[in-house]
Image (cartoon, rainbow, N blue to C red; front, side, top):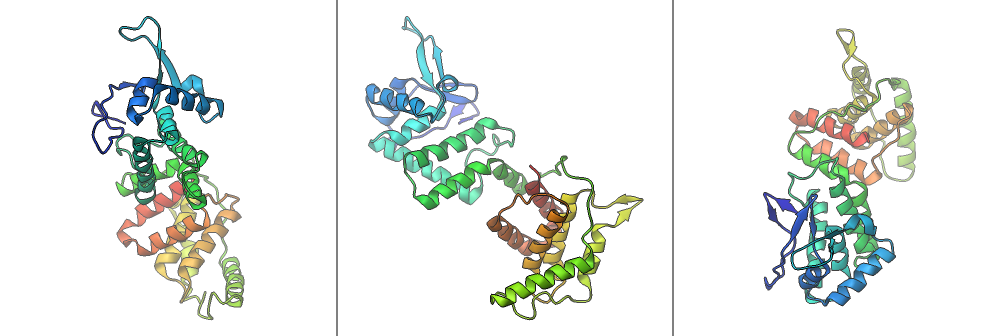
Amino acid sequence: MQNNNQLILFSSTDGNITVDVKIEHDTVWLTQKQIGELFSKERTVITKHINKIFAEGELEEKSNVQNLHIANSDKPVAFYNLDVIISVGYRVKSKRGIEFRRWANSVLKNYLLKGYAFNNNIIDTTNKEYQNLITLLGNTLINNQLIDEQGQHVVKLISQYATTWSTLLQYDEDRLTMPHNTHKSSISLEYDNALGAITQLKQKLVTIGEATTLFGNERNENLQSILANLDQTMFGKELYKSIEEKAANLFYMVIKDHPFSDGNKRIGSFLFILYLQLNQLSVKIDNIGLTSLALLVAESNPQQKDLIVRLIINLLVQ
């Protein structure tokens, strides 16, 4: 990647890779000869891999190749971008190819542990090239059977939630803004209906041995206060202006205010989904994500409430 006019791509352990690199349109361009030098392979081998990449539809040739005139050449020379270089790197069988695959796997690990691996200055939710690079990295790993079935699910998750990693980075740096494309009108979750739904949930959980009689016992009608709080107004205007904002605050307050003697995280998650369904909004957070989000809320500092709520809203909005 390009950072302050310097190139950071891949370095072999022996330090013998010296390739002149062309940087244009925010990507790297190498000839077949240079790719061969990078992976210590003959040009004919590189040509074979590139032809297969295009023939199998892994990449589209037109957008990933450019023909340029260079010095001491009487005809245009084909240059291949970073997407092609990465794909070739997963196909070649050489010591440098192995090093390259290990490097790429470490990049994937960083995506899992940190949510991003590139310089955070270039990460942008609107950066399609960044998202495409993640998708390419995942596809090449899967297509070449370089990871097991569990790893494939991980790669799929990384590719599907490319913009989410950017959202989490903004969250880490406390610069997460409120999205504009939220839904303004909402249907209130009535107190009696909420209690009835919680009772049904309790009965099911007790039956399968995942809850005790303490589960869902309300303390001092605190839930009623929380639900009323969602619809409060100030100077004739609603305090919480969208369905997503109300759902996020409901989720947060049930978990943090402990209105029940037991099961607050599970009930908070349950009411969160119930409220969204009542207002006919799809839940864009899967079960594991919802569990993680509930734990994040439970462990968060109360002073971080606004930031946590903004995160939840951003995860709800496309």
